[in-house]
Amino acid sequence: MNGTSWALTLVLVGCFVLTVWPFLIYPLILGLLPKRPITCGTGEGGLSASLLFCAYNETGSLRDKIANLRTLKARYPALEILAFDDGSTDGSADLLSEASDVLTLVRGPGRNGKAHGMKQLAALATGDILVFTDANVLLDEDAIDKLLPYYVDGSVGGVLGSLRYDGAESSASASVGALYWRIEERLKDLESSTGNVMGADGSIFSIRRALYPDFPDHVLDDLTVSLAVVFAGKRLIKAKDVIAREMMVSQRVDEYRRKVRIAARSWNTHRYLRPQLARMSALDRFKYLSRKIVRWFGGAWIGIGALAALGLAWLIAPFAAIALITASIGFLMIGLMARRGPVAAIMDMLLAYMATLKGIGLAMKGQILTVWNPAKSRD
Image 1: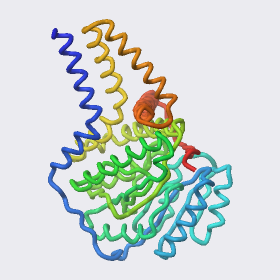
Image 2 (image 1 turned 45 degrees about the vertical axis):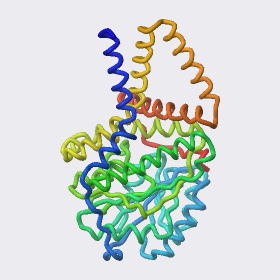
Image 3 (image 1 turned 90 degrees about the horizontal axis):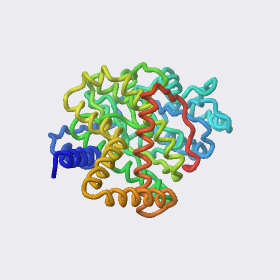
Image 4 (image 1 turned 90 degrees about the vertical axis):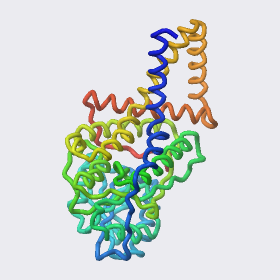
């Protein structure tokens, strides 16, 4: 092999390692790190809780959500429940208003986004512990009872729940999404066992009210709020026995748009939090780099690796490079048409990487996304 071949081979291997790092190599490293036990007390320790969620055009989910809230309230009567409607046009606010016996509704003036709504709710909440969830997420009946004992340990500032997805069999997009979230849940478990989890998603997490930070509307509130616990020197842990359930998105277009939006807001959040991220411990910075940064650029590693493979094929024989291009185009065409099976699953993985990279690119260009639309294929 000449110098060019060696260089292309190193690039190809490097891109492969970076692509699989967050999902294969990083968890192996976490498994080797010293463990920090998680102490769960008994009882609620005299702590009160407020459950907060935002809604926009969620009539497809709200009836089940309200029924779930009634179950939670019956199990834990002291629970304060606050909901924010972000200018819904489908009657969501009316449904929430009719449930005034179990929740307090705050009506927004229009589309301002989830971060804006959560800040309004957090300012009104009176509970010692703020519990954040989504309008389409259902919590197990004993979720609050099992959550509060973790806060008996004064070193704990935030607790994530565990998310279970339903509907994974509905499409390739749903099955890939379910696999991704199973890996995410496993990573959070490993991170929690070694110290701190690197951020929460909005389905189910909680923090001490005293740690709730101030932040602009254009960042991801779940990532910003949960990492505020780490910045404050408290532990952010994950509880396996605090369960939330959500339906998977089944259509590619819904999942693609969702990932673009989340990725754009994630990068804007990263830029906003950069000074505080730099002051984290070396271990937490390693976790953040492995779990967030390396994964966000997965589409770039795949693209660069593909170009390196093409270059190697050309050096071997131009015909091999042409054959590789032809096979790749054929695979992409079949994958885009497929809706089930392994080819469709691989295609959905590639689209997820590309959507994330697109969102990062939009954010780097200065685009700010503050509002969201619920995925219709989840209903």
